[in-house]
Image (cartoon, rainbow over all chains, first blue to last red):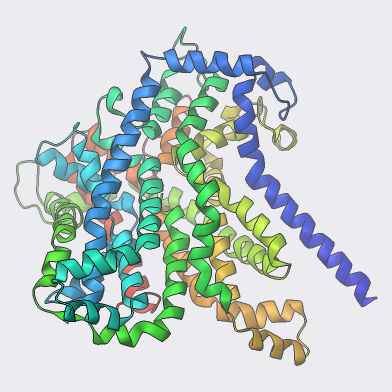
Length: 291
Length: 315
């Protein structure tokens, strides 16, 4: 009797898991298939039918030609903002995390405390204040109005701080100092190479956060040619008849093209997720799962 | 966008605690005194001041002054509080937060416990699949869900028509928005939280679970009376962080209202209201007042988490 009950419970559990898998995965599958179909097929064919490559090519041509290759410049802008912010964030955050963990100076704990608070506070809470500030110093509309705020990445500082304060053997740095290394050399030649996995982790999280950021570029950039892809998607939604049949008149951007633009927008982050996920999650939880 | 960083906050911490026990004291001993520390932190310190402290201070300044720069006390806070859009905006996110947090607690904990009770190799496949939508956070997730909610193209059309919706404007009518935004937030964020909770569950010493089993506790009892109390602080962490992020809702209502043919107010959420005040009414002082309201909410959550829960290493 007990065995039968257990089999029932297990089966119910698996059905639940499969149900949630459908919830999480079906939208992704649908999205990937959508540009291979025409708008008409999206409505009348089986939602999971696979369309043709020529449809995909057609959607790409239309999307590509939209407003003088807007998609391409949005992609370029996204890359500039994301990598610009990421590079600056790394240059500032890695030494800072090291300094907070392994050196002593006045104000260290205060900086650490503020860093934690800003890290937990949702980044969006600062966006309008940042806009007001950028407006006061006339930065609005320039790439810097997006890149500079993105380069402030307290989470990266915290990750680096945790790494250095918990994994660097104390003797190692002491030995380097005895050998006559300056403080900067100790960091650059000994501590920095050890932190490679942490640097990669910080870079990954900064990239994902920057690439998907919507609110900051949305308020900072008034001109559609300087949008990143995230804001470009919103522009497509508002300026084409894909969801608003009355808008945009003859603009040939319909649902397959919009789906394709969405795929282009998420592709870099999705690739990072797919290929780095295993090492990232196992790295993240290595300590936790060994117990 | 806070979502993908979430697992690492927790994961990094799980990691650090374990290693910290072995290496912590050694690191303490070697903390180097002298001026080098200033050098390492200086660049970051400039950013922290320029893009963390300064905008906060400036928003505060604008919030207590008039357009002409005169001190006006709390009058911007009072007039925005009396604005006819203010209370509805907070009611909207209140409703949304209630649904989103309840579903987080019940479903994320349920799924994590379920995954923890099956073979790790099988559960890793599920965890991976649940985590994937996190890559679509932000504008992309809203577009995907506009497709999912449009009965004419949705793969869930049988469900939507079963609920009586025949076109998009019916599915996204204003009364449904809190549920819809909770679904979107869940779709992109739950996977990360499941990974974190699963990690926390794995952190429970094996002997403890074994002891519970020997004492005759069944799977249910172990889950409810042993596992759940032990991961309580992660649940608190998840709730506070999700609450803080939820109060800032912007991209979701902004995009859905684009597709709603004017059905949905452009000041649906408090952040949108602040945006409208700044960009359409050109009233930066009132916009700053609402930003400060929201900043205070976010700050409160952060301060509680950092200084009251002992989840973070501040020494």
